[in-house]
Every structure is written in structure tokens, then in C-alpha cells.
Length: 87
Image (cartoon, rainbow, N blue to C red; front, side, top):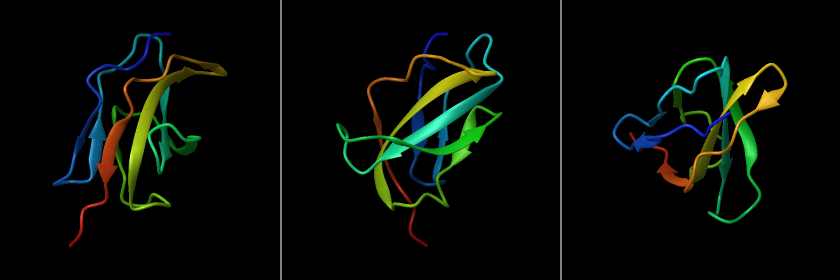
């Protein structure tokens, strides 16, 4: 399965969006404090967007991949920087 394209984080809303992937029934959003560190799952979502509001860190990098049952697709590259909006 191909990697999601056009991954974009909107700092004004705190939402990351991406293009849908053929065959994907859900998407994993993984986060890391550093670009080259070890990424961990933040959320599995069925839409092509995800709010970063409840992430365990306030800023870092993210990658997205498609998933169908137990099959996982390629990760989006390069990792996208993100930062939780402040009120």
C-alpha cells in the first residue's frame, strides 16, 4: 500500500490532513519528539485528518500510513513538524 501524500499540519487548528490511500480502511498517525527518533502510535483514525490536541507531547514530528486489517502501508515522508496550538 502506498504512503499517504500531501500530509499537512495546520498550526492554526492543530489538525493534520492527508490524501486518501486506495485500499486503506484506517490510518495510523505516529509521533516523535525528534525527526530521526523512534516513532510511537498516537492515533488510529478512519478519516483523512486527525487533531493533535491530545498528543502526549506538545510538539515534534509525525508520519502517517494507511492500514487495511493487519496490513500496513508505507509511511509518509518526510516527517512533518507539528506543534500544539496555544490558546
